[in-house]
Image (cartoon, rainbow, N blue to C red):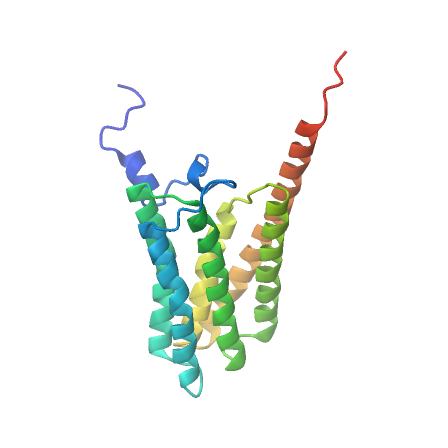
Length: 218
């Protein structure tokens, strides 16, 4: 039959996060219960607890180059994909998960920035641009939520996470031109994503305000 996927490839693509089309699950929307006790949220809590361990390992050395710190950093970053995969496999979506994941990601990036700044592992200008972007994104999300709008992650925002976190990770193992180049790419993509967030947020708020206006039809 035309249009039928007999091998379930479409479902597998969605489970593994290769297909992000379609609306976000209703359980993650504003106003839904938090539902903290889920398997994906357990991964999220472990990721959050791993950040102090990463900082301890990173600052235990003299130059910031630490394989163990990099391993913990990678595990926390990879946990973002793991909890998303588990949510899709088990169907255990939650409002808390939707709020917790980006917060942990931001804290992880900021923690990596602190280490790389302190030990001078990456260009300071790029790190400043990244800090400003991360703080701006948090403020933007809070502003949107105060107006009843959830800012959905756009494709360039998802893609930007990889070069940014990779740059911070590699800087703790092999500082030099390679992590610098990754950070340039990541910062450029992250700022482009932020511009799209602003445009999307303003458009959705304007649409909500227009929908709330009383009809003046004759």
